[in-house]
Length: 190
Image (cartoon, rainbow, N blue to C red; front, side):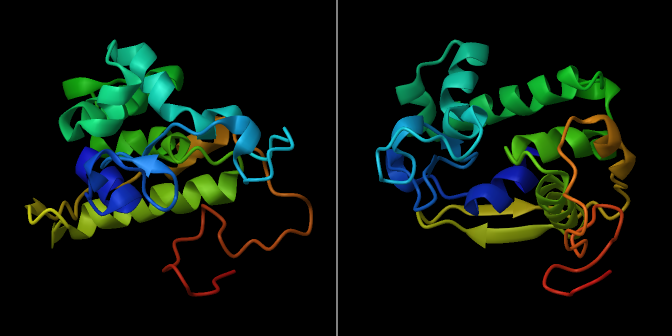
């Protein structure tokens, strides 16, 4: 699961302690952004939920590792991302570790996206599970060859999103990305 999430988040690139163009650090894309200046205007208006800005701080709270270490050390970054994912899983009342099945992590993966609306969170989770089922491999910018074996038998528990606390789209909203529709990305399914 960690390989699939980190592939979607960063394509497994670490960036040597620098943030990506999207503002995330390391393979798990932990964020450490000042919320009052997220859009460069510095006007103090928060345009995204607080959890979007400080996943590195949340990971530090859960692991006891410093934010600097979580943002500069790839192994620590993965541990931090794993701690956040497990925390989401526990918050949802789902088992962790060997007592869990990969498909039962669907809602936790959706929460890891930091999206607040159900369609966006479901899109992220759907893509992670597509990667997990198909497998992939890549040579990172650092020259490391990473491979995720295919797990075609994994069946995501999409129904978990009903109780995961995401906002529903407004009435009349475009439903092409409805989480109950299994549709390839880029194809306008309804």
